[in-house]
Image 1 (cartoon, rainbow, N blue to C red):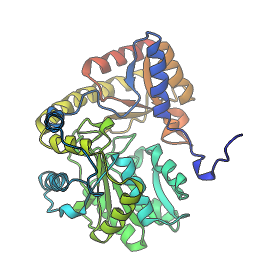
Image 2: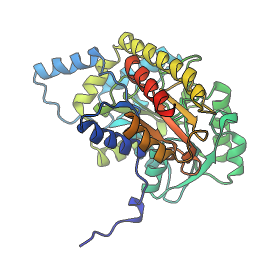
Image 3: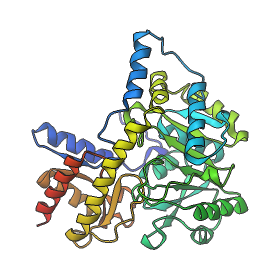
Image 4: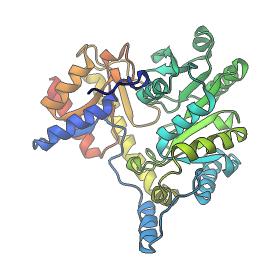
Length: 382
């Protein structure tokens, strides 16, 4: 008998993960694949993280439940990170440790939105935003952005949407890598304050910028919710540990939700995260590799016919128009994988309306791998 499926479960697949699985199957046949499909560093967690776990394991620490909001010493360490990066005096009580950033989005959406609420998102944008919102019976107000606005939403666009209950922003953004400056953040924060919309800021790529430093929404507003993670800058995607910073009046609400939905984040991952905070020197070395890869792609892709490339101010992605080469990004991605051995993500993952003519290339691997990927792309398109 076929199970009855709920309407909320009918969400689109995460195409980047589908491409990753296809690449795994092709590699299992003996093919060498250059991975440019997922936002995942090719480097392991910093030595300071793995050493911290090794010490805990050697001491046979029980690794039981922690309190739902996370290890107090990790929350304090993250508060210090905001002092060092942004000059903020952040109360550690406002820091909530989560099972990856995905858990943070679920907690934030449940805390501030009722079913049916409208939440504004920029397109192109991270697909899990709209898919999590849909699974929670929330509506997406799609803000169609382009190169002229740096693929970021503007207050004028938001005002044209009519009544919205929330705004989710990302800086640096996935898939474009573009960033919001201080004045942009002030304008969006003021819009939300004036209209009563909740403001959620995805800052998971903080630490990864290639010019002006990232500005946290916390520098201009105490009312926003911040989502962040150890996945990207700290090279800890599979450890599944992230954090939120929430306004003081939301702490208990988030705690109640976290206790019931997740109990607590994995204890061992929290120990690794605490150690990772001492690994900045190693992590800055990774960033130099990303910068070199970024420069190579920004130089090469326009010569291969890719257009309207997002500035890629941060993160580790290049988002480009492929319409001179193809008009079906899923087919292009399929051919690129099977004919050239390069895995990359079709733009339809990030923009279901216009993404048929765009692709995202991740440059979070070694210089040798990305150089090899570029050579294969050149040969494929020649």
